[in-house]
Length: 541
Image (tube, rainbow, N blue to C red; front, side, top):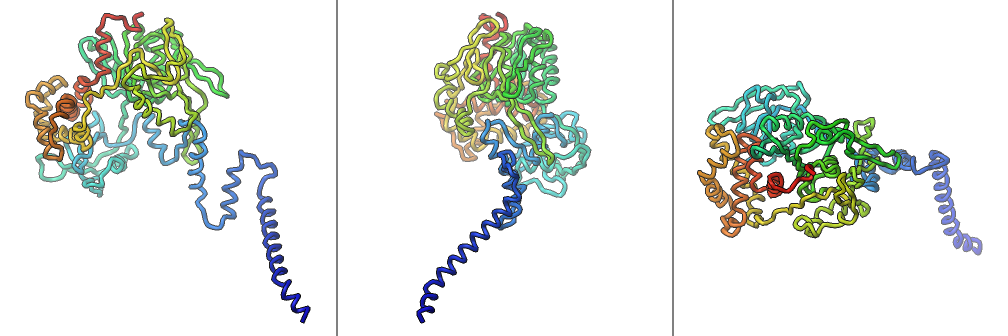
């Protein structure tokens, strides 16, 4: 009995110890088995690969290791600068199209209005124009898919209309005045993405060029625009880089070369593993000595900052506007076997005076991109005296003028953001898209008559006589935004100018729009005053 009592006392403990030993032995053996899979010298360079391999081979559930890698790479790159990025294979086509300057499509510019795809403009010489598709047509079907309704979005339309060059797409068009749909079988072609948004003469002396990006064909477009302005008698040039996010360095180098003297420094780069590399003007530019003004703002970035900085530091152009974004990092795009790529920062850009264009990103990516908001809150968009820390480090141009570092390009002439015409009434109109909608409807209704007009000035003359603003106010009231006299007093000129500009754009394109909207563009107006003024420009000194 005593032996049985002792056994019953110790048996649970023995069983427990046996189980613990078994679990320990199992873990030990499993650890040794897994350890046998690992290299004897596990480094941080292959640790991530080994984690994925271990999960694939031993995790309790089935996993998508490809997705794990795709999700992990961006997280790893977040530890670096804000502009080192991973580009998935699915996004590479769009990135390539943006930079090479063309894509496969049918050649129309469209806008979604009243749940319908409206053709705003047709690319000259493109597939659609050759078949007779016109501005004002409604695209209601592509293939067997109906493109009408609240679910129609820009991405869907792009997906349906774009495709490889040489492929066919059937498009059904509803044209005003015709009861039946028109069907077109269109062979897609190469459709250019223009870098030069517009070029025109502001007056008989000053030419204007707006550059939206720096891509593969930007230099050729730029030189064609300059030639057009030359033939119109332009003695002075305004180059608008506001909102330009940058792009190809090679395009900038060639464009800046046209206004510099031979061997003048354009920009240089330095990286941890890359020695200093200088880019200089190869010869005296064809437009050397020409009066040049460059317009910039807080969204002028990267290659466009190189352009502005090169002219400013060499005293070959006057920079007008507000401090630029401050992106001065050199990226190399490295492709992977699956069609994806990484854009890796390898160096920094410096202007000829030695200023580093890049602003600080030491507090992280979120803080970096919040800087624009801080500038606005701090008052930098409205008062030059509030700008800092760009005024902390002094540098000197070719003519020993003082320019400031700290990130971005400080303009020679500061122009505050104009908020005088803002009102809650204007905000409600823009929020509901009523200005644009009414302008399109008006242009569509009077298209045949308006097609006789050839310039922005002619549109302004006609539309003012017809009191377009008064008609619009009635339309806005009918669509949920009652006329507010105080708001109208503050914003009336902005509303009327936008209406006329959008109507002109829908009929004669970008030149019509920009020539009208310039009337409420304070920065552009300041540039014109400067060119007409008695004080010498930087480029004249």
